[in-house]
Structure formats: C-alpha cells, structure tokens
Amino acid sequence: MSCNLLVLLGATASGKTRLGVDLARLLQGEIISADSRQVYRGMDLGTGKDLAEYGEVPHHLIDIVDPGYEFNVFEFQQRAFAAIEEIRGREKLPLLVGGTGLYLDAVLRGYRLVAVPENPQLRTELADFDMPQLADRLLQLRPELHNHTDLTDRARLLRAIEIASGEAEAASELPPAPAIQPLVLGLQWPREILRQRITLRLKERIEQGMIDEVAALHAGGVPWATLEFYGLEYRFIAQHLQGILNRNDMTQKLGSAIHQFAKRQETWFRRMEKQGTRIHWLDGTRDALGEAMQVIARAG
Image 1: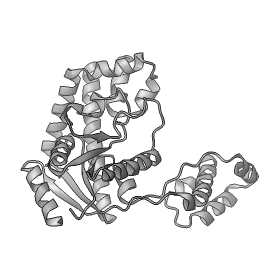
Image 2: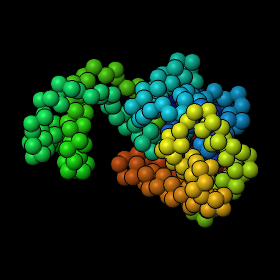
Image 3: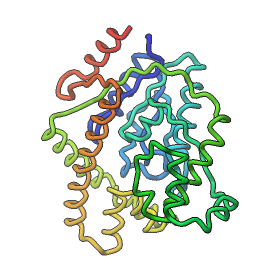
Image 4: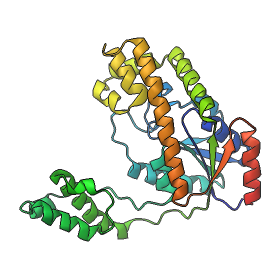
C-alpha cells in the first residue's frame, strides 16, 4: 500500500469499530482508537467500546487512564504517534479509527502541540499590564489569532499569552512527527437510518447495564461532577441517579443529545474536507467493507 496510515472515521453508532476490525484482519493491521472517552477504564457501555468485537486484533489507546485523569489532545497526539511508530516497527498497518474530530485532526494535520504549565515569572511580569497592553502582547505572539474571545477576559488573555510564549519556546525542541501518508475513509448513513441506529443502540446499552456502569463508577469514587463533565450518557445517567431526572426523561433527553452530537461530528468532518483532508465516503447501507477495499486498491 502507498499509504502508511489508514483512517476510518464516522459519527457515533455508524459501525466504525466493526468495519475497522474487518479491515485490520484483511490488511494485517492494528487499531488505534481516536475517541476522547474510550481512554478511560470502566467507561465501557457509555463510550461504546464494543471490546468483544476486536477479538484477536490488537488495539491501542483504550483503557489507558482512570476516570478523573485530565486526558487531552496533546497527550493523545503523543501516544498516537508513538503507537503508529510501534505498529510500523512490527511491519503492521496502523488503523486510526474513531469519531473525535479534534483527535483525528491532531494526527492528520500534525498539530505542533506542547504542554505549557503556568509560568509565575511571566504572570508577575504582566501583572501591571492593562487589557489593551495584554491584547497587544498576545497579538505580537499570535498575529493570526482566530479566537478573539481571549481578548475580552483577563484570565483567558493571560493564559493565552502564557501558552503562546511557552509554545514558541518549546516548538524547537519537539521531536519530529512521524511521516504519514494517510488514506482516510468515512462511514456514513442516511440521516434517518443513523437516527434509528442511535436509538436502537441506546436501548440496547441501557438493557445491557449502562445505568449500573455509571452507578459503579460513582461508587468507586468518581464524583458526580466528573461524570457529568464526560457528557452524554454519563451526564444524563448521573442526573437520573441523583434523582434530578426520572428514567423516561433521562432516556428522552439522552437520545436527543446523542442525535445532536452526531450532527456536530458530521459538521466537523465536513470542515476537515474544506481544510484539505480528502475523505473517501463509504455507504453504510451497502457493502462498506467491499467499497473500502476498492478504494484501498485504487490508492495502490
């Protein structure tokens, strides 16, 4: 294959995991999960890990940290790059599979990310600056600034200056990102069919014990606020378990939220295309595996 990284993306409940596993079996590959919540141990049904589907196929970046750990896109990128190199070292094909657009972009576009801690010395230096002076300092560091909300709040402005300064200092020390030649596949369904799939999967996961999963996480020491921070299933089920929502309201609100989330994922994928990422779309209603193999064959 001319590509050295196969990417499979799609909205929630689109069937990415099953298709990714099928492709990994055919292509001697290993899967790297690009999902911001599947990194957490014990968060299984709520994140749709579908661990049983992997079988003998090796998978990475699943169940690597405990709930409450502040996992972020910087750490994901570093771990994903390391996994790509490790898999290549075994002469296998890495398959990046998931629906978290920011994580996918971090690998495909090679964001130069660094972890920037607080800088007390810099904050002392800036303590007497007024807002226009701080804004000018930030714009000197980032003349292409897009997020102008950073200019309207002093705390955000200070942190933005801190990050921009730290990134400038650390960028020269970052190890080079792996050279990737990706082939990006996208699994899509007609909107109404995807809605039906989301509704059915939610029903199945509740029947399989998703409410008990959230209760067990709280009993194991994960605060309600942390569970709610993880959104969707964990937010609404946590509210149900606290008596804020009855079961019917929880199910209705959660279903609606997941449908909205799927729309946001699709919007992100369209933006990726506008920014230059070529996505070869596969029709979920047909033979997606066959279509995928045809795309791969044409790509060489």
